[in-house]
Length: 638
Ligand code: BDP
Image 1 (tube, protein in one colour):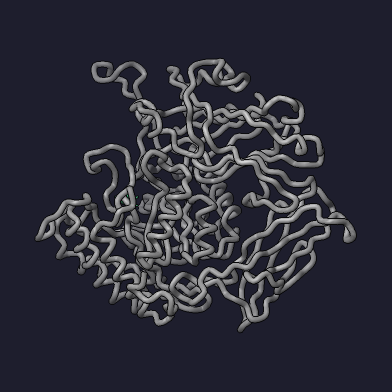
Image 2: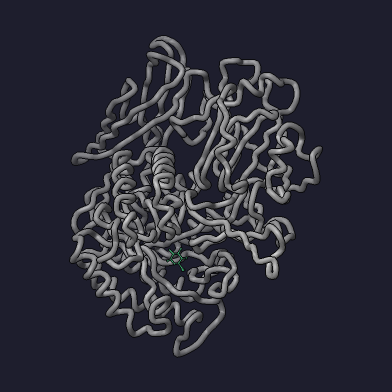
């Protein structure tokens, strides 16, 4: 089918290769430069009947403005809400982005400079050309991809370099998240060729180039990847590292660990090794220590011989901490950790899922204000920059892949599984070094009761464990006795909406149902449990007493009823509570959504509802009770 026939594009690479190995976040260093390509790009949506005109007429071969009308489109941003046009908002198919850029002469003249084009993320399927030459393709939103483009650019030195990116947002049974295209063939009801995109997840399928596009350089012999794993023994921190170097057979690798005060605390040589740090400053979560989020800088230098100067250098932030799970506890640095946090979305007015620093900083300020110590990246990986901030602030993260809405039995086939395995590899490769990331989530609310779910999740979870030592979970809404995936996870994460989707309006049943939920799951699995979602919609400004559904009072009362049970069960085996949701967010239109999902503690514009104040009191109280709250952070203090 034309909308999703991505594979026909695959070609034999002659010019450049896709990078399958390391995916270090681009950082400037004495040997690396970055040129950001954010700003206004030229844009056209392909409204042709088969959505394939761009490929048939080779729009990538010439400037986009020469093949038809174009409009301005900001990058990064979702395209949907930017034009004043309902057709664009709900567009399905290929959209085309283009930007011309001057590449610095010195990059081109020095033949040994590698020039890499990197897209932070684009949703969903992307094809990239430079000066009309195909340089890479990538399947999946939310994760970065890149291609080495020096050879292509050098061929046409002297003219600006033209970057064309075609992005297709069509979801099929084998994409993550899955979806289906439905053609409406009853011509008494629909015009010829009419189709809709069906999805089984509850957020708007925003699309476009969502994160930064960069050109960056490395030397020809370069640090391709770094992996660290940390632990500690008494007061000594231990950092096991390995460095992958490409472009040199026997490189000399020197590693130094530098503290916040600029003092070097450990050194080592070689592509693998151990750094030992006396009197280590451990990485602690926010509100668990006087000095949360302590990061060392691991400075890696590569020389071609022991005598030569630095060929390449890269500084990786490193937090020294451990994560362990027992039958009833989640331990960080061997101390019990209780998640009092939120589920989020990358979502805001106009930009949709587009990366936006003011929004990100505001959200972290709100988390700190609330006394939240954690969030889950529901329902897909968030921007790397967000994880960097979480590392620095000590906010703990459950890192989720886009395995959301897997409800159709046909999506449990080998093609989907293969792709799901690749996505987990890309996710772990990207996020493995972030101390804030304490657990991987492989999916949200899959149809775990279906027979194929068992083998599917067994393989997915064991593959994820083979990539990294962190605990792995998936998020369930199934009954404990029918869940095919739970036997393989380290922590049970349960979503439930008592008195909302079940027994709507009956607040009085929350307590009994929540007790049963926890006791049933624990009896069956003896694993720690996180309430990974709970909540109720509240239209801001809507009030009623006694509480009725959709009012701020009802939302608050649902939370209070849940909290009473959490307070009993957290003395036993419940290790966390994550509210659904941090803020209101956009969804597809439907009769259960009033301009989006309104379960936020904050509005979409980040103003607090009544529930936000309730959670704030609670989270600071919990932090106080643990007895480790630093002196600077007593509530209410700010
Ligand atoms: C949960 C889903 C979440 C939804 C939420 C809701 O995991 O994505 O937004 O329900 O309906 O089951 O509000």
